[in-house]
Amino acid sequence: MSCAGPTGARPGTWHVIGAGLAGLAAATAAAARSNRVILWEATGAAGGRCRSLADKHLGHTIDNGNHLILSGNRATLAYLDRIGGRERMAEVRPAAFPFVDLKTGARWTLRPGEGPIPWWLLNAARRPPGVTLPALAKGARRVLFGRAGGTGGGLEADLAFERFWGPLITAVLNTDPAEADLGLLRPVLLETLGRGERWCRPLIAKTGLGDALVEPAVTSLNALGATCRFGSRVEALGFKDDRVEALQVAGETMSLAPEDRVVVATPAWTAATLVPGLDSPERYGPIVNAHFAVAGGNGAVPSLLGLIGGTAEWIFRRAEIVSVTVSAADGLVDRDAAEIARLVWRDVCRALDFGDRPLPPFRIVKEKRATPWQTPAEAARRWTTATRWCNLALAGDWIATGLPATIESAVRSGDAAVSLLAEGRAA
Image (tube, rainbow, N blue to C red; front, side, top):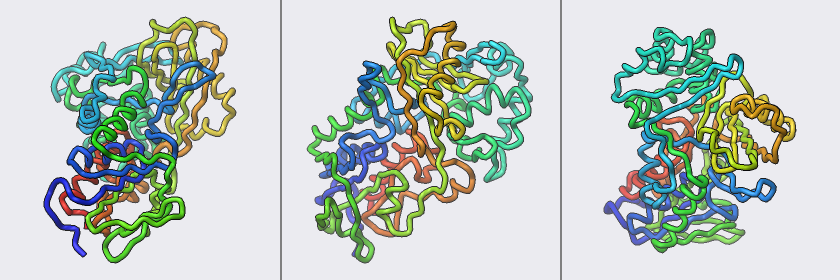
């Protein structure tokens, strides 16, 4: 049976399984095409690994994890415009990335210049202290022109790695730089820093990722007549010939019409239980986030600060909450929460000149499977959006979009899944 048909809205129903950002992108894109949409989510709320939660202990809303969006993330910005969430993001203009080296006390701010040619790097004052232009160029050659399957191994010997390439690779790929696939970093650089200041401005959610990226999407779906079924786990898919013909939910089988479409936008390990022959990644990179309630506000704290030479790596500030992110946190994730808090708070106090301020109320959030471990071997295991079933497409940050597993990749995969099915190109 063929899935071919006219481009655009269809008489059937679109079933989007999973309400993380990939699923929300797919559902809102399908609904915007005047399709009937049902969004299925096993938990009680949307957002997945990009959710916000009201923490009673801290007395504030915190994000499950800190995520940095850049102005060059075109799919994410289009998604924000589609759901009406763009105004809930604060853009840092001009782009500025402050850093502190906890070992030496050195402080600097990276301020990219205009245009794709990085003339600004010729000025030593605009580079990390002690980092030479040839050292930066060595890393750039490896990232931009290196062989397929090349990793960051061999870049670890100089100050350029410690103060630029290492933090960049770890933050973007959530993987040990020595193992990380530099081919996944390449498009990120080309689409942001490689285009100039206008394309790498940080966008930070004013009150939380849920408020900017998730709640407006659910509101938009409701306004477009979509159905959001939270607390409804799709347990299995029924297949016949080249189609998905049924969904199993709560032990009940729901037959699909010939015109219906299905987007599986769950985490990889869940998708592998629904789709025959789909292998999930073998290894994942953990991320640890620490949230501290700093009494009396922290207006002097920058909204974003990179840390070198300690346990903590990035500090995000929102109102009275100071949040810290540690990527590729294999050596930290299994430690006790109080121990993690003490280690990270020590770095925060040094970075923010808090002196010996006592450990404040804290919340440690561990995401043990935050992203696939983004090595060349794992990258080769990533699936495409298309499947061998003509009414089924896949979405998620683990899909092979050409980007690493990021918010931008998740959104692009959701958009691509809808385009694929709407144009009858899935098979």
